Amino acid sequence: MFCPKCKSLMYPEGDYFICRKCGYKMEKKGKNIVVTKQKKKEITIIEDADKLNVLPKTKVVCPKCGNNEAYWVLRQMRGSDEPESRFYTCTKCGYKWREG
Ligand SMILES: [Zn+2]
Ligand SMILES: [Zn+2]
Image (cartoon, rainbow, N blue to C red; front, side, top):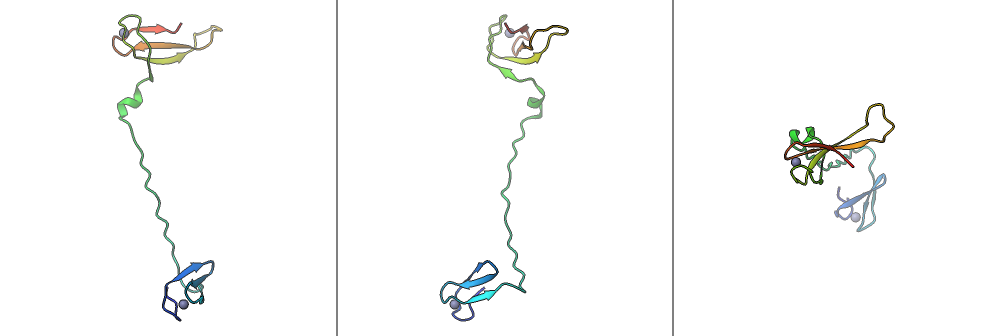
């Protein structure tokens, strides 16, 4: 949109176009002004499907082989008043043990 008076570029402001050079004001009404907002592309990182199926891992020393990583799961002992306990499974040798 250019100013009909001085031919400089006009800027939209509210319902008008305003010439910043000479101050000429023009109504937007009747014109189709489409402002297209470009959406930022969202990047979703999808981990390997295999990794999503395994249990969480933690740094803990296996009492059997000394490996320092194990899968863990919280489990409540059936029929007991004990709080939930962590159960570990060694990522190396598969040894299972209970926390504590
Ligand atoms: Zn102007
Ligand atoms: Zn182990």
